[in-house]
Length: 408
Ligand SMILES: *Cc1c(COP(=O)(O)O)cnc(C)c1O
Image (cartoon, rainbow, N blue to C red; front, side, top):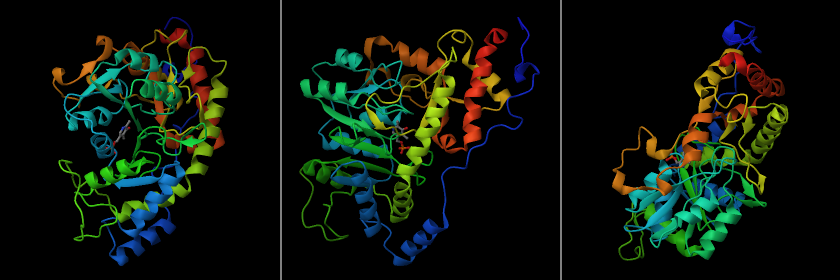
């Protein structure tokens, strides 16, 4: 220790005596439990049941799209979106280097080649300039991911896709309820893809949805997830089949998930309002703290969804302190932070052969350094904590930054 320190890590008294606690996630209610019982007794559990149709309507409306197609998870939604847009073998699809691997795996599943492109250091989302530079004659589609607490620049990326005749599919797994210029996340691309996996902001254990306002795409996506049935067919009552050669699957979800999700969507606007309020308190509390910056929200996000809240330690006096040391110091003060996914192509679960994907420019320095080595976060439900808890978060980070010298 090069100078005296008041850090709890060095024996000082912590900012809080008990680690900060968040309300448990996902939320549960007796009212939803009663509705689950009703659906159970109704025997209408799947196959485009009334409850699924209701939820599709609720969720598509919320995000300003005409159609919602409910599915088993937020990976097959991406796969269906790509397949319905005709993306397949021989095509390249641009994806951000920093995202959950599902974004890239969906590209592999349709036989196309993911091209990993670097992210912006501010929003941690796909960099439009790098995206344009990575386009080749084989590029067919771009998948911007609205990641953690940021929205990808839909104006710039939309413009590039239009100019270069590329399909834009938005991965909104982290952006339930987010809006860009007042219009729903997922409604800007040809298709928007959402996940309802246990940790997400709208969650039913598993689940996913594609939204689109294109009737032809909606029909194709529906058929792909529903073994070829059209939207109006009843079980055993198919009157027509899918277009020749369209590979269809069973990617259906169930009415039970729809009950939980429909209720949570009713509360989504209020949840986002609370999250934004907490995010602002933390941002204001850190405005004059050197060494800690926060992920920028979407430049034109009118409602910012949050899957996580990110702190970036890439300036003095914290820039050269190992992230693990900073996390240890925060934990000792009472704040538990986690790390980002890191780049997909370095993820322990990503085992695709090197010739099946491409990394633009041979590396992605912002994703590899800023995101993977200098960024820490907590998940969204922490933003639901009470005012006193939220106030404590910037205090802990400020104390760690003030004592940076002692961490060297
Ligand atoms: C969670 C997630 C998905 C989809 O995941 P599922 O677990 O299959 O629902 C897709 N993209 C991103 C960025 C995600 O975080």
